[in-house]
Image (tube, rainbow, N blue to C red; front, top):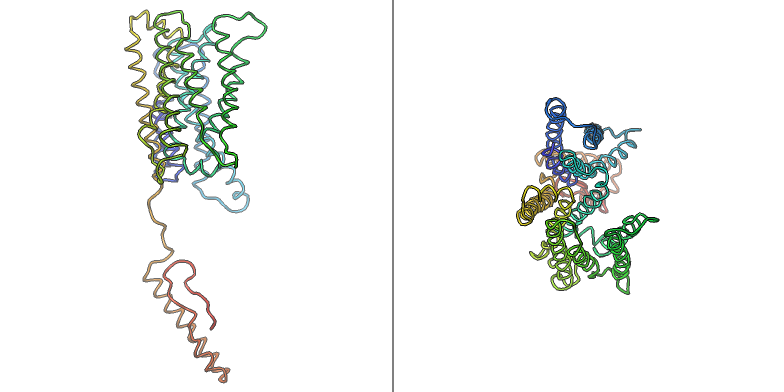
Length: 418
């Protein structure tokens, strides 16, 4: 399942976006693996679990896969006449949206699988699990989006007429509003880290509004700014000093904070000194090596936060695993995700290299051209025989308007004669 939903389907999705010929074979191959794995997961007769979120969401994920297969099969039939022409537009849209949602749903299902296998996130631990898994996944998603914009999204950014910081600041402001009103149960006593969590939400929406304002010049053109990077840096500083119950947890949160501070600082340096307020530093949209630092540290920060719940760290502490070993393992996974994301951006450039086929080959075109010219000459001779007085005029224009422009559209160009 992890091979199919975690690697094959995302790769096939990218190939579908660029309309590569390997999109359909790769998705069919992934579907076969997913179906076999689904039945093996229910027939192994090994370790069993009580009803859980992983098994419930698995059924939903398979329904998404069935719908996606149905959409793809319909589109391969190329039914474009009558009602099918209107229905095809809806199916194309649904196929695209569902295909892009599939990697997100797959990631959620993988997290549910880890939680279920370890028996975490029950009762009082549910709230903390939600905070860590949602925020950690958000940092990883932010890193992926930065990678996409950096490597293959420059043309899209230009078409929007806005700077990347406009979108970053908008999301930061919205996320800050949510955190401001959800990190504390209003009407109850302020306990633990509620005040720190809430104030972090406040600074996010305040800074996000400032970032949106600074993303435009006075003439309305897009402008880069430091706000998103500075917000990430401040968040990392706050998390590095976040009070914890376990020494191991304190160390992991410290490394998480330092990684986040590094990502924010790298983003500020990139905008101000590397690209100098431009979207790229080269005409072909290639990235400077320093521009990879911020996205990678966001991957690492997200994984560190995903792996920093109380239950996880209590399990590691009881097993005698040091924070150094744990951080190195998480950074190893960050490198793998970083590698996979960069490989997918390469797939974005693999549009089908086959040149468009001509409707006819050159020899057939030459034969048809000669016959058409002969037919036109016959028509001209008939017209002259019926009206001899205008023969000289027509003779001077004989077939002047027809010239060989090669195979393709507009083989003949009309001039004054015909």
